[in-house]
Length: 322
Length: 120
Image (tube, rainbow over all chains, first blue to last red; front, side):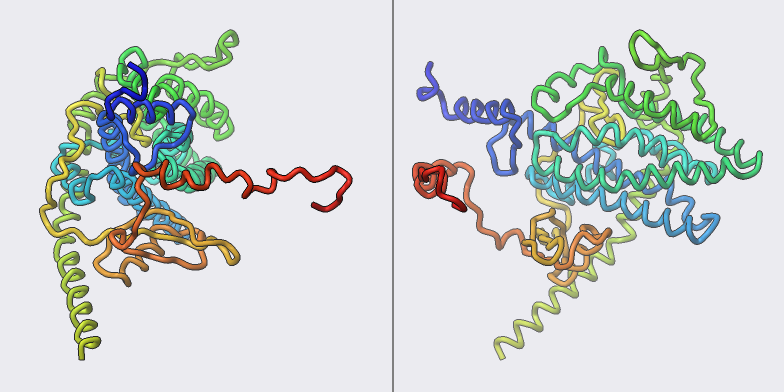
């Protein structure tokens, strides 16, 4: 069958494939295969949910920040996480899913968020460790997503990445300050790194051999690097940063491999990871309950704003008709 | 643990058994969608930066400031209700833009000018 005789769907699909092959972007009202659309909705929505839930672990420390400077920084950071969630919901909506439906899928637990946010924040050093390691891992994941094939997602990621750099640097600077302090403060930093190192490595997902979906996502240009490639990049980046900071990464197998030109390292506890994803992580129930409460407690504000807008509109119409 | 990936940006999320929206009617009436345009600095056009929901125009403008200009990204913001925008259809792309495709004489490179003619 020649192209001109092809069924309309096949011609559309060929056009879509050609756009991807040219490394061009797909834009909202373009025809796209249903699988591509669904993959994107799932990915962007769960990314957005992660940003929104991600406000909680650090938000925990806003009222107990050690100085006004640290409090202002932390407030700005947590506000950014909300902003990132909103950029991403905005991108997801271009695929024909409504904001309320996305919110509902999060608070009913039908869609998930990254399990990194189910770990508790036990000391102020955790604010630093999250900035350095968790946001550092997020940067590794998100920088390649700036070139993702879906236009609105890539543009949202560019905005996010610009702000993420502030997040990582404020965290690292916080830890540097504590490392220049007392022995107790240095111990707090090390203890925090010990807890967050492995969960940060888990953020990249299971090993490639166990990630059968990666190939399709890469063929569609949605994902640009495999889980293992990104994890390796993160480990190689973190080792000199840990040395400069003066902390030890809690992995006895971590060693430079001259032949590969990369660090060898141990495997995270994937069973712990699976439990977190299934909703059995240390703080799952608390995070979900908090998000649900925030939504329900905000209902009267949304209703009041809607009523006020209707009243203003009515008053305006009254003026023009009078 | 097969169906998990780092695709969530902030870390691995499940890829299967996750609904992707049915397009079902929302449980409460949704605030209208606004598209947001920001002028980065004087001398530049307003550029589309994203969208948001708001109960009215005034709220849309305030939310746009908080969501899209936290770091001096703009000196002016436009918000426009998304349902007020008329857009060309991607399906009509070829007939829509074809008239300009075959008019090569509209481009300066169409014209041969002798090499010894300066400043042209």
